[in-house]
Figure 1 (tube, helix red, strand yellow):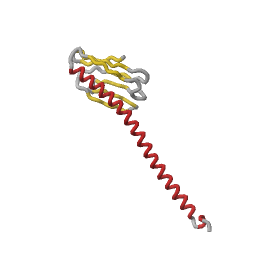
Figure 2 (cartoon, helix red, strand yellow):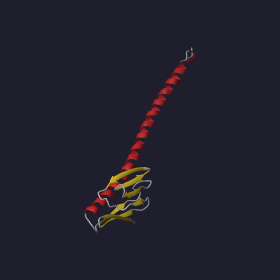
Figure 3 (tube, rainbow, N blue to C red):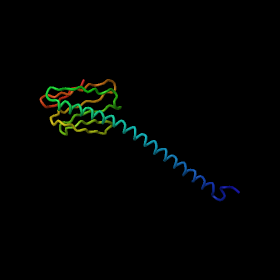
Figure 4 (cartoon, helix red, strand yellow):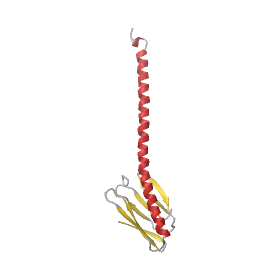
Length: 140
């Protein structure tokens, strides 16, 4: 008597296929979770950079006219490169990484709008100046 005579082979095949699909779905879930953690870690680097720049802006503002500070933006801090924008309208530092924006508020209301991009090959130096209560920027 064959297994196929009573349809048992078909039932076993369906059962084995179902088990394989469950295992593949579990593996996909684990891989997806790991990729999400990697993206979150890269976005956290962008946030840390934004907070560092915002902290320097606040320090320069609080210390008064003529005070300046230099911030080094390391090469390849995020890959691909991030765009850093200091926005006068929203009084914030915006770091745009992979289409996602991290925004960090700053204290001063008189901030010159400025934009730069982090480099993947060389460090950039951002100079922040307080000129009569207005915060200005230059990048080298």
